[in-house]
Amino acid sequence: MLEIIDVSRSFGDFRALDQVNLKIESGEFFTLLGPSGCGKTTLLRCIAGFEQIDSGKILLDGRPLTDIAPEKRPIHTVFQSYALFPHMTVAENIAFPLRMAKLDKTEISRRVAEVLEDVRLPDKANHYPDALSGGQKQRIAIARALVNRPRLLLLDEPLSALDAKLREQMQIELINLQQEVGITFIYVTHDQGEALALSHRIAVMNQGNISQIDEPSVIYSYPKNRFVADFIGQCNLIEGRLEGWESGWRFAIPGLDSIPVQNNNEAFSSGQDCALSLRPEKIRLASRLDASPDECLFSGTVHDMLYLGDVTVYIVELGNGLQVEALLANSAPGRTRLFEKGDAVQIAWRHDAGHLVN
Amino acid sequence: MKSEKSLILSKFSASRGNKGVIAAAVLVYLFLYLPLAVVVIFSFNDSRLNAEWVGFTLDWYHKLFNNRDMLQAAGNSVLIACISALMASVLGTLAGMAIHRFRQKWLSALVLGPVAMPDILIGVSLLLMFMLLNVTLGTVSIILAHVSFCIGFVALAVQARMAGMDDSLIEAARDLGASPWQSFRLITLPLLLPGIIAGGLMAFTLSIDDFVITFFTAGVGSSTLPLEIYSMVKIAVTPEVNAVSTLLMLLTLVLILAISRISPQALRN
Image (cartoon, rainbow over all chains, first blue to last red; front, side):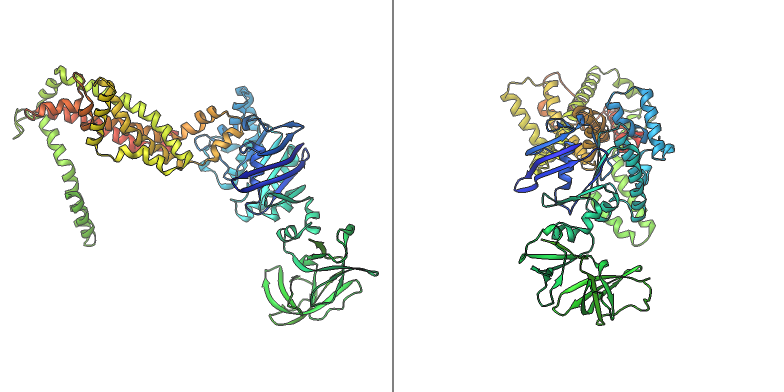
């Protein structure tokens, strides 16, 4: 188990990490997600030992890591650039951590052969890294980091250099690999899709702080604040004020009718300014809608549209000028034509479709 | 400069077709190598005068290898060049790494300064310094002088290699269990080696044929090959001088070829 307690790190005036607290369980696939400059890479480098922390503690299985040199930590890293040693063959690269651990020669060659088999590149043992494709380099970098069975594997945007097809394939391989070896993975990425697909839990980071730590489905459906809602996937953020009525909680949108909303766990109080986060795919759209009693209904006009093949994204402008993004599957039953700019449409969503954030 | 003129000429004639270009190239190479060829040819000439071809002989080489002063100067030169190149390689490598690590412009300017400085200036100032410090002029002072102007060349070559190297390689080595020394020995050094060797060979050639700086820093009984040749030429350019020049040329040529052949691939395989 890795515990990060009140860890701060500044570079000059820039606070890269601001009192970060985090607990990562053994065997977990944990992702640090955020835009560039949010501190995720700094945190990873602090765990690896390449970066000193100004204050706080990092504990691995209860033991503080702070004064331990990088080479003495049972933690290995997969670098964004792969960092394969160009003057060593694939086999020598993989053998490197075993040599440093002073294993005997027969054991080293046995383990190298074994791990090359695992990443399905046994015939590349005597090739130099230059002769490998991007995906192969990636697999060798992971093999090299795993061969000495670290307690923790850190991955710094390892798939960012691969093309989209290969990336998806590598994502599946990573999930399977992590399950097989059972080693804790800490994965850094700015790609929210990758984070959602791979992780057991995600920590969304922003400006040196952790905005939210949750499972992917919770992060997606119940973002804690505007930043998380906006950063993860597409999201409408409708500004307004929460009002408590006898009939229940209502959300007053300036210039429009107030609508019933859920106030989960009474997180917000009456009269509080907040935002309703609403995923585009939760909004129904048609030229005329028959709203059910548990839906709210608005009329508007199509302001913009984006045809994406499987779906079409519509930006619908409501009466008060508010623009709402809605997503329509192009294969939906009864779809005969696409709406065009200027068409009058109606949109509706269930009262519990939105989620309040501050 | 005539060679520059020829180059411009060759560019000009490129538009007129291949023949002009080839002719210009031949002229440039003749201009560069004709004087050297003359020296080589006359070193085999069976005559005391560098005037006309009489017949082939190896006499001058024979004489040369019996000339005790010349042999001692040559030995001195090789010794000085080896030690200077070695010392410059070590110091230049450290300097090149420091320039890369600290990324300070003035640092590289400071190390590379002597490379650009006129030799006569370095020679005079070194002489002054040795006098001030009461250093006896001799082999040691020559070596110190040569090291000082060779460091920059090695540093330049090493820094270029460093710049082309992914910094995360060193971190990866540390990450995978290598101590700072191990990661230097197993990763940094092998990757810098082509640069170090190229710089070292460069230093060797610069040292072995340096005249100006050596002239100021040499003492009694510590002559080098270029100094010895100069003192012989003061009387007359004898075929013996041609012979020693030819040998020096051969050595330089071999080293230049070696430098240009050293590439990461060549070292790796």
